[in-house]
Length: 65
Image (cartoon, rainbow, N blue to C red; front, top):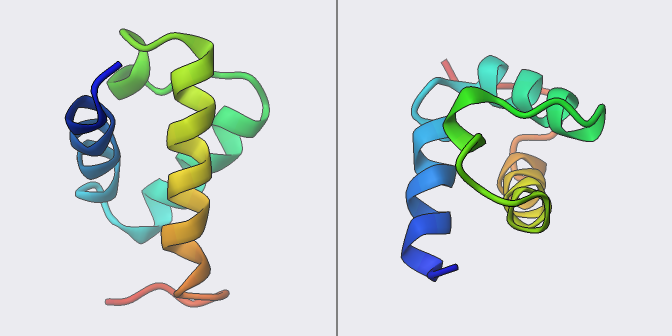
């Protein structure tokens, strides 16, 4: 899997907004695949989940408006 494809998928999720990103993280942790990631393998989905967690760690418990 190319890094650019992973980056594009992360961006597709992040563009939905902070609350939706947190929801998608919860889905991925529960083993549920968001539609934007359905074309990726589980291994790649885990890498995307890790990247989303790093991104969202910057915001703590708050989301930017």
